[in-house]
Image (cartoon, rainbow, N blue to C red; front, side, top):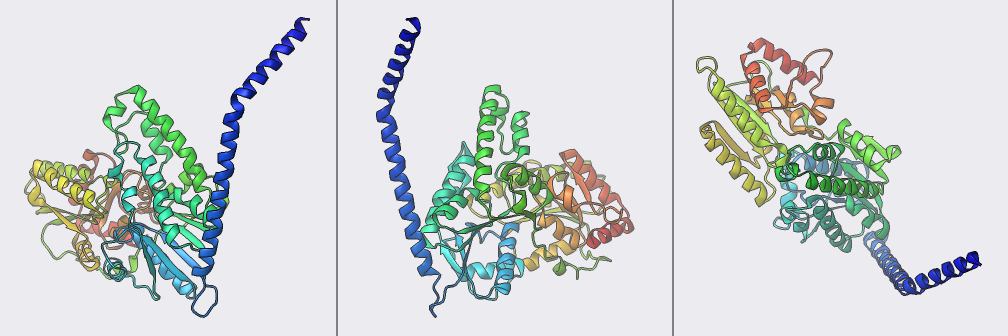
Length: 470
């Protein structure tokens, strides 16, 4: 009797729960069906749009290859990859149509191409169609003071939607690291997907910084001081890393720019059978005509830094280490020293960073010994490298480091951060001989600069020769 009563109670409970949740389940199911129908309709419309766009003037179908590169006029290493990739594809597949999605609405397509030639000495052999995006502000980090990674990633989806609505390609290549756009183009645009990853949006190293409560450019001090906030951020990072892995796995082909990036992408995206290391193009040939013997013509020593003025490049470390070097040096030991920071500014935030760096040099009393060169032409960059004794690079876990390679090819003794691509791929012994130096801290950089400057010219020449050979 008890069993029967218990069974009856259980049935009544299930009936009650069913009546309670049935309306909600019905509504959710209806919404899901409606959403599916809408997305399928959009997909069909986009396929029709793609068919009309890929039909050439002669009525034949043309392959449309599109690169998603919202900052294609920025002038950094990622942009060199873009233009070299376009040049290589145009040479091998001249019959295809090439499109670049860009947010550089304040310049014309011709000006963008002229800038690529001026900065990188790269000229394309065939025309390129530029699709100008008006909503690039959605991926600006300044728009998201908190939850920046999530905000920029969601913003990139909306920016990708704007791009997809204007042009539906056959092949979609994300060449700037906006992985959250990949499902959009794959499942709605029916595109084949390629990714060139310069730097993972999130990495296991970033997770370690938060887990160990270390201060970093992506981990504010007030979070590191609060255990609860650190745990919340760690959970947020793990969830973000999981979703990042899902969207990244939509790629049909994945290219990464270094061994360091490869390890992180293999861990996050888990598509090893589709992933290959493709080192970024470094125009070393252009620098090989700089003589190693007697390369300097000006008195004193020039220290040069190459890199976009972004927070992760850590230019303040260069200025502080240089100030420490000047304060520690004996006046009679070396001739005059000057630090030149060369880089590109993409927007007002970058320009603000440069102004902050100027103020830092003033606060340290070395403003007369520090110069800033913004968005300079390639020939001027080459001239500075031909005169420099030391090339500085201070980004922690730099994914590769084209500027590091350029310094070494030009015969400039490199001093890079002891991490990432420079450590694993670039500043490594060549035939057992030293090719450059690595450091981590302000003191380490200052001491290593002093060590390089105290070397004999013959010893520096040997290191420059090894570096160029590598």
